[in-house]
Figure 1 (cartoon, helix red, strand yellow):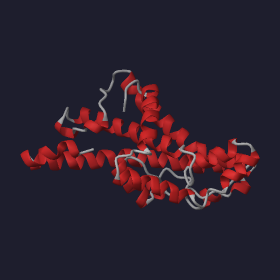
Figure 2 (cartoon, rainbow, N blue to C red; figure 1 turned 135 degrees about the horizontal axis):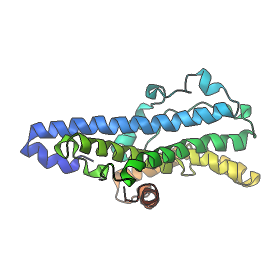
Figure 3 (tube, rainbow, N blue to C red; figure 1 turned 120 degrees about the horizontal axis):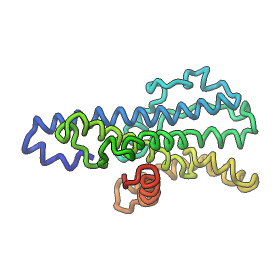
Figure 4 (cartoon, helix red, strand yellow; figure 1 turned 60 degrees about the horizontal axis):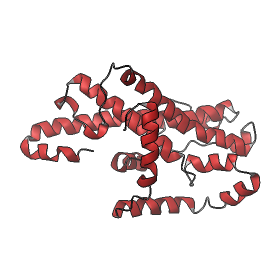
Amino acid sequence: MLLRSLDLLLENPGAFVTVFSTFLATAGVALLVAITVHEFSHAAVAYSLGDLTAKRLGRLSLNPIRHLDPVGTIMLILVGFGWGKPVPVNPYNLRNGARKGMAMVSAAGPIANLTTAAICAIPIRMGLVSWHSPFYFSGLQGQGPSGLFADLLGFVLFFNIILAIFNLIPLFPLDGSKVAIGVLPPGIASRFARLEASGPAILLGIIMVDWFTDLDLLWGVLRPVVDVVGFIVLGHAI
């Protein structure tokens, strides 16, 4: 996202350092919010459905440190999607049955992210904060503290929407796979569940293909959905 500022590095190295440091701080705070909300919601719904596993392991918490996965965090910063540390859940402790219970727990994270995005969009929709996409980050070089706050809201919206949509893809180990198992007819769900072992390899393969080529297999699917959700939540493209 800072590639647009590379010219600034040559023209004014001091200004570039300021932009880069405020970018890391702003994006980092927004990322912590998105991941913490997502993982906490998994733990909270599991707890409400009768499973105490996450609570006993300290995951029923709004402390971001308890939810960060190093690799997932780096991926989210570098390529726009990633993951937090998976919340441990014993599906056999859940009310409504293991299959439906896990679907509810899994859906909680993306729903919480979209809810957070909608709440953060309120001051922008009311005209209290000016909107500009986080892809055009300017930091304190723009409109000062008010512009930096607008940048922060932009990143919070972006990360929460991306995290929600990405995790709803019905591919293991993403949340969407468990939601799919919970809503599909039992026979189809059982056959779909057999793909769990190969799901991570498939997902990683798609990510690597996109990383080294211009095919945009993943982002090509995500982008239109993110744009639609952005217009619904914010009234603007992200």
